[in-house]
View 1 (cartoon, helix red, strand yellow):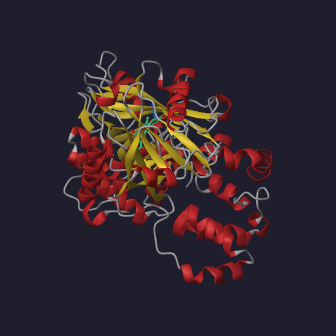
View 2: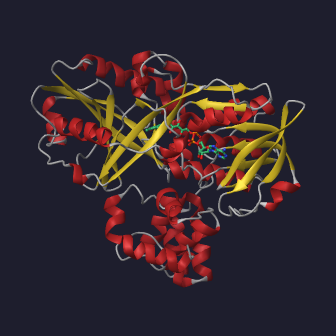
View 3: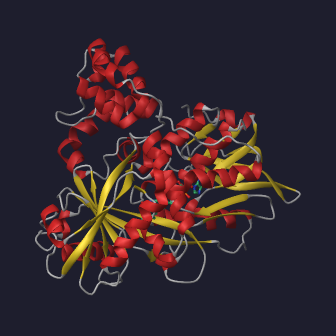
Length: 502
Ligand code: FAD
């Protein structure tokens, strides 16, 4: 994937997509599959906005059953199944437990009905069978769980994803099908002729000294998530705001809190939150509060962190959890559609709208539903097409039986190859090619860390990483994984500087 900016000025695109989060990436991917001449611009790194700050769940959204949003749940369950099949290296089934206590607003019968319905809606696309758990079962599975008042619980399955890499694989796939994609290019103005947008002005944020340049296109899709209101105002200064951003914070500790993922109703406000295993860490989230500042400035606040720790301590009282255990935290903004009501009750459905100048906007929705959101968007420009996103960049058959032979041929361990398959899917062969050209790239970055130097080169050369943060947070999945990162941080930074010259 080449970051070739001069080519943008030589083309008149069928479609220019603004925003390289999951929605922009998948719109570009699908439009390229439908043979459109596509450009994708992202002002930061791909997925650096909300699309790397999610709870990392490819899920049906069991809690939406409460609001009878059966259509949304069924569609999400279908997407969950698709990804577990098409991208098992990025999306994996995960068992969740919901414990129920005396006096809970959602009693045990309701939870049992919920998981039953959830599996029923999934039909043949179920990824694991729900179970009802007695109080004793629960305490046997999870001895740290609060026992006082515990009446029982349920176990069900959802999937966990590497959100930033799912987004990246859509960008890579768009590029592979001919789209021109670039990160760190910001759209600063719309160019209009007779009131219609015919182009944009853009600036290269990696070369601020260079003049802005123009890009021409026949159609424009703004997939700017929480930045939607800002782009609406760039088009028309008095445009009403369409998106109501709500902030969601996660905190991460290398301590193991529980073996399963947990979905827990918070005592303070009755919202539900997750305690999730994330590699060898525990990730807790999320909050959901209205946010009115600049989307560029969003960050966790001490009150958010305190709320999550307090609620987790309440359910796992046997564990000593302190503020200093949570050195890693992150915040994202849900780009929800503007409607009245409390933040948690705003619909997660998406909407597509146009402006008088002919710009298309998409906002709202869930990460999980991105393929149907992309279809809804691209259909507005190129309808009547049967072409859909059926694979990601790392999709494809892997010759599992042939892996030991491949390992011998490349003079590396089977474990190393399996590690690459787990991260890159069928594209592990790209990494092997790099190592074949230069065997030093098969070396581990740090003893005990399953990461080889070829992955750093690949991230820069093929996956367009341009900074240490791009590598840590959105290519190597280490930024939010203190258990993996901290013991190796120094070696890793040294290797990044040596191998990638970043
Ligand atoms: P973004 O990812 O924010 O992308 C918009 C992009 O536009 C940004 O990268 C930004 O830099 C770029 N941009 C803005 N202005 C410009 C410009 N002028 N020029 C160029 N580029 C520009 N969904 C799920 O399915 N599962 C979950 O577990 C889940 N958990 C969530 C937890 C939290 C805390 C939050 C906040 C959301 C969660 N979601 C979840 C929802 C999901 O993450 C979002 O719906 C999705 O990521 C939104 O993607 P997007 O592409 O619309 O926005």
